[in-house]
Structures are given as structure tokens and as C-alpha cells.
Length: 364
Image (cartoon, rainbow, N blue to C red; front, side):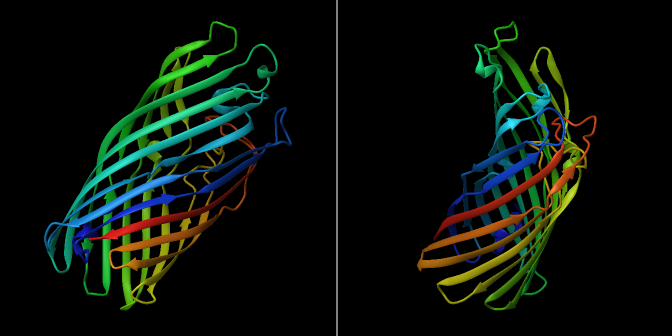
């Protein structure tokens, strides 16, 4: 998300169209309430598209455009969920939650000299949240307590960065993605209870995205071999409280217990010949959730990701790139839940993520 590197792009430009397919499984073996001993699971294959392009306006100026999902971009589907979003404990619910942040970024980079460039990007965010809760207890009779909520909103932010090249082999990038606040608004619908609570209500949530600061190093060990190191500090603490209104009688502040954290990544790119290159990487992502705040939609465990990819130039102007990755999440046991936690769940938390991706690149 740093635009500064565009200024050192070699070539006239390119267009990249990609698809990411993460398969995410999560489960919580419940240790208390009437569902003690049962396991709640979510297994979902998400399809996440992306689009990136760069165009060199001159030797010193480059323009970039991107569409992607930096936050959300997927969904969870739980069966037999417990105490979701303040619903009564001891009842069984099927819960589906889909959060997407459609992100469009326009960037401009300027090469100040052969050792330094500056870049900035303007970003438009369109966020949606779709929550569907089915009451499995009342569904067995003439009444049911189903909830459907769809809310959306937009915001504008940006990013700035510097690229420093002390030598031809070494590149140093410093960048920041600026925070933004967005108010999601829409309908909150309750149906099938046969009571006065049935109806459609105006609802909203106020969400704050974090401020991120990143540092990256890339070094060409040999003309055909590149190694890289990246670290990013993410200020999730500003995002931990979410104000909301569901109905006139349901409003307040959700407490997710998020904290500031960081990401560290190592990577390598080896060019085999003019047609083929191989990439590999590793990323460590500590949890951004404080202890005692884990819940069904807040299973943010420490993650260790291993990545292997390739790029193959079919013809001079057309290249295909692909990858597979696997993320290991050590299990987490939560014996007690903080009194302020929004989504309350105890027991053992497990999570697995397998992902694959394919991208086509058209070179100008």
C-alpha cells in the first residue's frame, strides 16, 4: 500500500487481475452454559478479487490504481452459536456474518532522484456488513426469532510513503496507511416472534479502522535473487469500541478488546530464467485481541503463515502468477470472559486457513 515504489518501476506499465480463495475454518468447544461440551464450527470458502495497475507517465512520474479488500473480505457461518451479540445464553442460533470493505486507491509517485522517491494515494472505502441469525429453538414451533441486518457506509483516507535506494541492490521503504472512520447505516429486521418486537428498524454502527506504519527492506543478493523483510505496526487500539444502534431498545458500545500489534514478514524471489520465477515467504502475525475477549467472530489467534508462489511469462506481454499458503494458529483456551466483552464464549478456540491465488499480468 505504499505508492513510492511505483516511481522505480521498470517498464511502461502493467495490469494485474487476481482472485484469492481462502478457506477458513474456526471452532469453539464450549465449556460452560447449557451447551457445555458442544462444538460450534464455521467452514467457509471466500472468493476475493483484486485489480492493480501501474502506468509510467514519464521517467520520474508513475500513476497507480488498485481495487482490493484490506479489511474483511469474507464471511463466517456458525451453527449452534452461543450468546451471539447479546442474545440469550443457552439458546442455539445459526449465525452468518459477512464483512467487506471495497477499497479503491489512486496513487501518484515521483522520483526525486536516483536514490529517492515519494508517493501518495487517495483511497475510497465502501464497507458493508450483513448479519443473519436464525433461532433454531423457536424454528421448531410456530414462532421463531430471526434477525437480519444489512448496513453500509463509505469513507475517504489515504497513504503516503518514501522509497530510498542507497545502492542499486538495496531498497528501503517507509509508509503509512492513514486511519479512517465510517458509519454503517441500514436496516435491522426482527421477524417471526409473534410479539411487538417484530419489525424493521433503522440501525447503524460506527467503525474506526487502524493507523498502520510500515518499514520494508529488499536486497538483491544476486541479479536473479531478491530477499525482503517487512514489519508493520497496526494501531488497533483506536478500533476496539464500536458504537451501535440496532433498535430503539438495543444500543450501546460493543467492546472487542483489540490492542495495538505488529506483523513481520520475510520473502524471497528467485528468477530461474526469462520465463519463470519462484517466490516463497513467511509471516508472523500476533493477535490483536486481548485475553478474555475472544468470541465467535473475534477468533484472532496468533498466526504463522507459509507461502509458496510462482510467476510464468507465457509470452512477452502476458504473465501468470499463482501461490498457495497455509497459516498455523496455535490453539487458545479461554476459561473466563471479560465482563465488558461483546461476544461471550469460553472453552477452546481453533482456527485454520488454507489459501490459494491466481493472477494474470498484462505488460505494456
